[in-house]
Image (cartoon, rainbow, N blue to C red; front, side):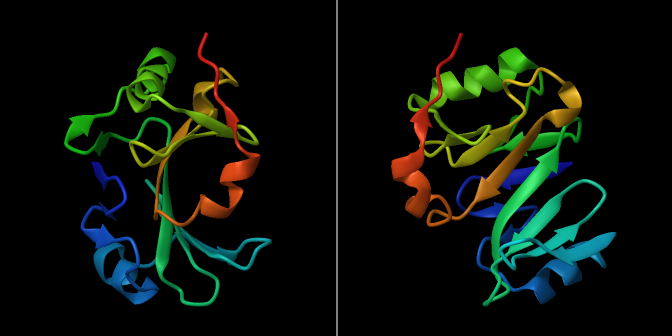
Length: 143
């Protein structure tokens, strides 16, 4: 089970913790690579950790569809209606290139509109990750 505490941690690994701390908690990743922005991506079987390109400190985490996940102490409902309920709870869901950012809750959703369950994911991020992109975001309109 993956436990996400918005704006804070994933399974005890704090946002801002160094990559070495992640390896102590989760072991060696299945895949380790750099993305096009230079961020360090560590992929495990049930989550993906994203570290800042320079500081190598945790700034984001993504959990793929179907992984048993708790957000702030509540079980995640992976259904489309469950994900849209999170959007309503947030009260101000925003969209950026297919991702739905819930700044009030502190999570990001992927695959909410595509319809394919395998495209769905939920993520955790540090407060400053989306700050520069906020002006480019659009309101996410619920059906």
